[in-house]
Length: 365
Ligand SMILES: Cc1cc2nc3c(=O)[nH]c(=O)nc-3n(C[C@H](O)[C@H](O)[C@H](O)COP(=O)(O)O)c2cc1C
Image (cartoon, rainbow, N blue to C red; front, side, top):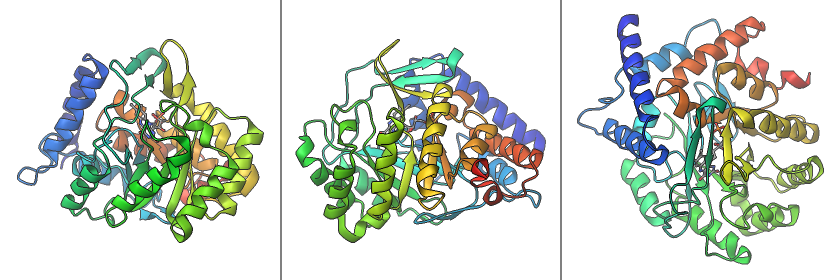
């Protein structure tokens, strides 16, 4: 793959992404998923995004800066950048997304039963702020269908670990929520690489209110030894005291780690969860608060507002073992992983680091 070809492909893909952004947001998302699904077809792999995989490989490799990271329970991955939950809720496009270079990804949120989510419109773009607001409400095909899809793929998790974001059905009472978590976990126990319990979506009434130390303890009691494979995803809107109590509970009960964070709850210009650039500071704040409690002992995956490689550096320096993106994928297009890895390398080099591992936690030094 020559440099000229790479730039042609990435330029065309960039144009495609710009065209998508002229369409209504959720329709554009569906088109993107269909393209990635087509890209997954065995008879013509890489058809929609030729050249992406080699371009990411080139961006990730090289002797100067080592981007590899080891995430306990997930494994050693070639670079830290994964895809956040909510993009491929139904596990339709895993192969295509892996080809775009994500080092790991979360599918879902998956609930035990299929549900339609909230009425449309429920996804809104704010390009001037590089943000999105969504109130999707866990629209998904349900655990049975999605796990069958993942099993049929016979996915090689060593190439790209795929985890499941676990949700509860809207109609499930709070007192029954853990049964929902167990059902989803059970459906994927042989096909997923890791699990993230979602206690943080602002769009399922009552879900965030479950995030208490007592509830975290109840989850651990219900899951028993399986708790070691469970991550918990929290929201960025809590006070420091409340948040730090939760971090302590997560560590005390032996969870795999923390995914920080979900979206920021807003009431205007639309009600829902805000993602993208305005979320970065809030999400970074939770990483700092978490570090005050665990000093790097609880594995943390940083999510929220990373638009450039520099923003990835900020998360790693604050103690994230890996990171996940969503909104920058929408705004920067299918080459986002390659672009952000180049920027991350540049930032590491500028600061005199030779590897991501070396930069881990450096903000707190
Ligand atoms: C349309 C949309 C749907 C989402 N759905 C989920 C979800 O089902 N489960 C979840 O844990 N997070 C979900 N998220 C949150 C993302 O995983 C991520 O935490 C958030 O967008 C912040 O990252 P970003 O600023 O890079 O987008 C969703 C985000 C968006 C924009």
